[in-house]
Length: 125
Image 1 (cartoon, rainbow, N blue to C red):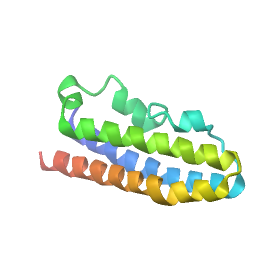
Image 2: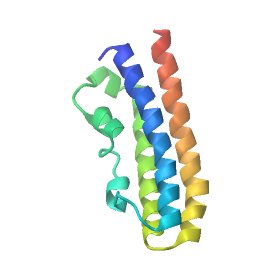
Image 3: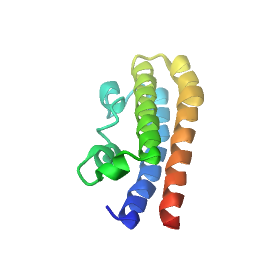
Image 4: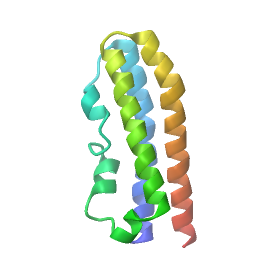
């Protein structure tokens, strides 16, 4: 896969994962969501996850440090999103908010920073 295409996928991922916080905040406030917690917890259901684990990424990229870091952070991000959503849908608004504003927020920031770093590295090559 060429660097330009990868950079575009990473840019798209930044936007899509930014939307997750809003979706989770809405679920916490309303107790409802179009996504179930099990699906939210999976890192291969979103468009970025499908790309990340899909056939277009070559073996060399899969064995790279940025890929390894992004995969781990993306998995952690989704697991935590699933936990927040589970709490929200069970009506445990306080715990859901606490998790959203602490652990999820930290994981989201780390993922965003790692994706941005990888994008910048691709632009330099």
